[in-house]
Length: 245
Image: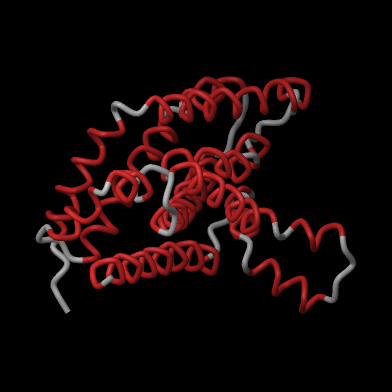
């Protein structure tokens, strides 16, 4: 097994980040991300009429917004490489499968990381208005980063299996909707406890709920981190298959 050299993955990630600077869809996704979250909090949730020093309503919508935003920023990563034929050139370069998978992941998650940083003005502007628990806000942000990492890894995997950006976007949106919202089934249906627990286990949004309450549960941290690793591992197997195809 070849060594994973971090600098090679970061070299590829830097190249990918430059390409994102010239992608109008990414800017559109960032604007949608920031505007929708703000409108959700101040208009739909009527934040100032609730009169509570909590941002739980703000962070609760992140899993839903990720269903649209993540496919937009991941759809081009591998699908466009296959469409233009540059994937063959990329596979002949001195990169291991993990270098390629991590390079794509670092660049894409870097874009999402910037989007999340741009949400900071909302809580910072509200802090003087109430006695907010900074520990809870920290947990909520930690959850959004972990959830975003897992969803990004899944989006990249689906992009590697798609032949076009449109197919990658639709496939990622459908799959993310399923893994994000599958726990809603247990909310509306009177299922046995063991079955409800089994279904909830596969829901990314369910594992985000503890963070939105200000609780860092090691089980949820492990699930989101390991699921991201699993999606990246499968991605490396897809890359390896393409090399030998």
